[in-house]
Length: 145
Image (cartoon, rainbow, N blue to C red; front, top):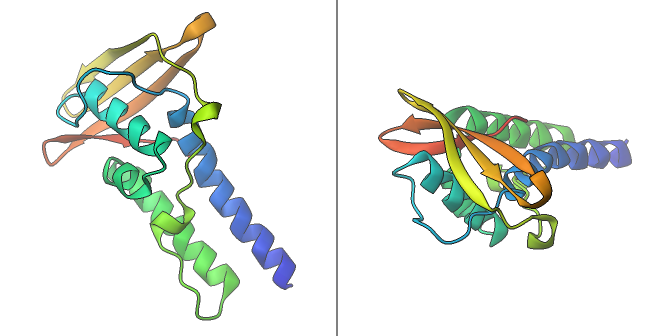
């Protein structure tokens, strides 16, 4: 029973990790760092994740993604039982930089009101898209989990 619980915890963390890995595949290079624009927020998020800075990456996540990560942490806590309590940063996983590629361009595909989609273009035709939302005047990354 304990082994099964640990496997479920690992699976929950892996799910969150897989979503973050997609974002990590779109590393930003140079340019403005910050969350005042969709492209800037995407670059800042990827830079934080590549650096292994879970707290900074967490700050750049949107409200829907945060709610899902918090729910995963709560589920992990319930599955393992005992005194151990998991928080969002415990289940938020970041990938190593060697699993990423150097982008050739970061382009805002669409921006309408408080939502935007940023295309990150890479070598050999690689392409990833990140969805962002503006919350409290700042752009935040919403990951598909």
